[in-house]
Length: 231
Image 1 (cartoon, rainbow, N blue to C red):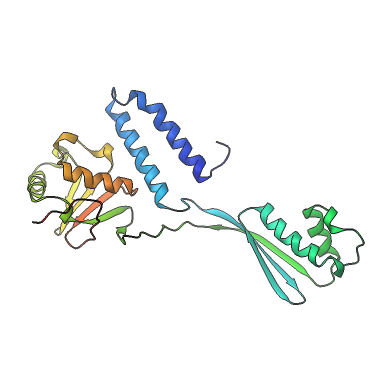
Image 2 (cartoon, rainbow, N blue to C red):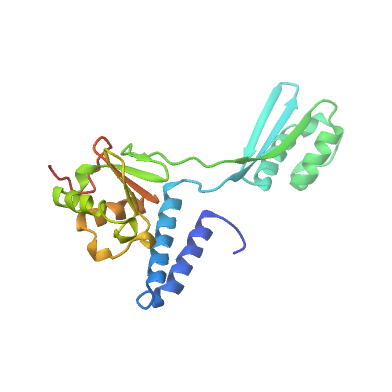
């Protein structure tokens, strides 16, 4: 992969899933790995920019104050600064037509010849921020959801799981006193058929949000995209 753009990374994950898919039925580990790749895609889609990006900045000091330019590429920044230089080319002692000069030459010669104007430029890395969640659900590396999204019979089953040894439970789960913390990664599941359908749907919803863990809590937010149960 020649670059690390969002689309290129998603395409790489899709290729990995496609390569593994023919072997999913024969090997449970591969099936779980495909599910984890799908969760990774969801995590990337949850964030507008999933990794730091470079931003190129320029400060131009001139007789009327300071101008600021910014771009996501060096070429884009150079284009903006060159436009500034061409607009003020008459302030330097140079008879050439700046329209016929390339951007690098225009910028270099303008600031070398201008008696006052100065250019400062640098590149900074901007860290990503999680996108706005319109449902205002509490999301970190986990998704917090109201326990109303699982039925009373399912809570009885969960209570029975809690009496077992952790290795004997179909999901990795812990009691939080007000609900449960459950690992949402498919690779952590035991026998999928032992997991009630409503809990499976809720775990899948967490995976779609790109979360590794699901917190079911009586005081957490609810969503209209999952069933609600009264109990």
